[in-house]
Length: 329
Ligand code: FA5
Image (cartoon, rainbow, N blue to C red; front, side):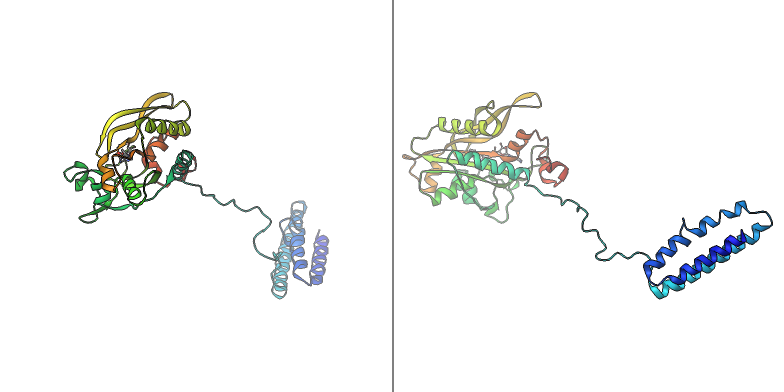
């Protein structure tokens, strides 16, 4: 057994003396000093050794180990790091990368785009107006008198005595008619602001779609059939439309648009917004001849439309930027 040890020592030293570069040194380390190396397996001789040989053999093995490790270290210092070096970049460029998280169009923007498309097919152009408005466009020209409760400062976000964040997209009706001679056929989609208390169906910032059609001999039939076409195109051919009498200062007669739909097995009438025939006072305010021109207008809440379309239970989810919600659309 002692002889075996001497043989191992001679063999290891010869192997080490032949090492001339870092890869060879690493091979030596694996062959002799590694966990599956020859020195490790030589340790198993101990259990077969006779009691009198055992201490000597143990000592010899330890000495050999220390010696080889010492010489290994020395060589390592002269030859450099013996561990296999990764040549090239430290990352494996052939590995498939983490797929980038793709963004997507916000559900409200998707609905807005679809509304533009649906009304575009019916001949409506898209018009835009400012979110920061003056009282003239938000109220006066829309036939909303100074004493009307809608003008209460507590019901509006006023920025100074005469400017406020628009409370409705009806302002764009005025801006378009001021600049365009009739006939006009536009939709306008955008943000509006009201200091409403936040709950599942109310937000202080939300979106509306405004529609305005002015021509000769326009009637309620045109209004209802346009809204019906929209409902069928957007909610499916089974959607039913109902106009419920209502009041808006800028339309006469006025109505609320309800849509009958089945949400999670429950059929109900859902209010989407207001509509009516453009009030002659509005035509006068923008310089249209009310004796000649007739028209209809409507203003619908886009969040409400989206909520009904997708069965979304809370308006606040649109604005929380929670990708678990947004990625569903
Ligand atoms: C108007 O804003 C009128 N300008 C609509 C109109 C246009 C009538 C043209 C006639 C002619 P109303 O205040 O009802 O009407 O609002 C319209 C819709 O906006 C509501 O039916 C609802 O869908 C939505 N809406 C109103 N307030 C909120 C709110 N706080 N949060 C979310 N949606 C709202």
